[in-house]
Length: 92
Image (tube, rainbow, N blue to C red):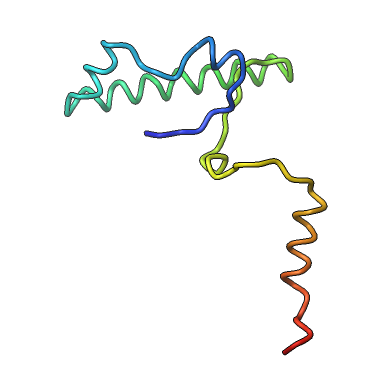
């Protein structure tokens, strides 16, 4: 299942690929469900652990929507775009 992660030094150290044993399990019709469960439980444990540690944690989870982000823009620019879209056109 594809997910997006924030590329921190921790994620770069950890890596984003699976090992040969996990690859083998992902290929199996029944075993892929077990390995997915294992990875889901492990990520939940890491996420819980990082939330307990506070803001200095190395583990961050990004939602699927971050995949569409290609640049960083000021909030004022985005608000101006929304305001322009809500303002009725003078030509109507």
